Image (cartoon, rainbow, N blue to C red; front, side, top):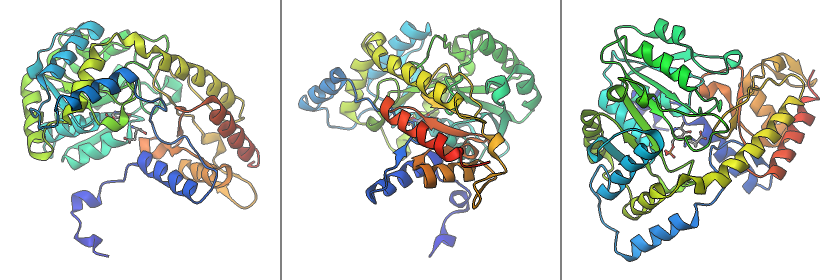
Length: 399
Ligand code: PMP
Ligand code: GLU
């Protein structure tokens, strides 16, 4: 093994736990183990036909060449129109960069903005990749934790306390991966007031679950007074449009940040896939209510899973208002044993579920919370019922 030759930067990077668990489940399935995977955050729906049709037409028209690095002008204009229509925000195409997924947008931002002494406040529980991308880009991640008793939402006093002279960026997602929590307009406004007290402090607002919310209004922090010039709004096609495999995300930011991100991208990957971008432009021009059927299904599944989780003694759940995750607190199981095995932490808890219930979920420690685990409920009711039944049965053997 020559792993000692790998860069120290790489050696200190953790593998994505979501992707690792999904891979483990696939491997077990290929060995004929009847595994149910609730590990990956991916809609189970196919991309809507009108979007696929648009990609086919783009291919037939010969859209097979390189595109401008920040994206096709037609797509960037559609993104501006969408931001105006849905978020009441005014952007021009020069403030938009299209990338190979929102993941790349986040990497571009961190590589563009961070120097070694820069601190990045990450609302915790956080999505797995924020922490590792910040580290890899040379910044210092500073987790600010909000537990289930505050619906996993950071309050202004906590943010104020964490900000210091070195704080450059704040990263959070709303609706949140992994908790499903959604910040209300009043909560976002209060956070914005704290952020505005420090010059040169920016926010990366990850809004990739924007279209998957239940009852909750989901305002962007960019729409708060004085915040657009401090906000990097990240969104993408993966979740709301069920287009994970297309690899298309975008950001809207002050022009100097957008230009910096395009510069990074110009050296690393160039513009995203041409015909995919053409289809994304059509998708964004469409009335978003065409996607409501997915949201309705997610809501039905949320209610089903919530009921079944609440039926398991010791499981504490919040009431997620968006995305397609539950993030139950399982600390009451720590110290319990089935006679041969003991659950001491969330890592062991998810191993028990995989080994004994054949249900793959992701440990909370990957999201910065050692007391919880994540369930992705983006699958059918039948599969969810079977998974919850298995989990309940196995946990009943621990006392
Ligand atoms: N942000 C969040 C909160 C996510 O859950 C994900 C996972 N898909 C991403 C960003 C990245 O999305 P993609 O790269 O598929 O656009
Ligand atoms: N974002 C999804 C998740 O949280 C997909 C996997 C990934 O990109 O990490 O599961």
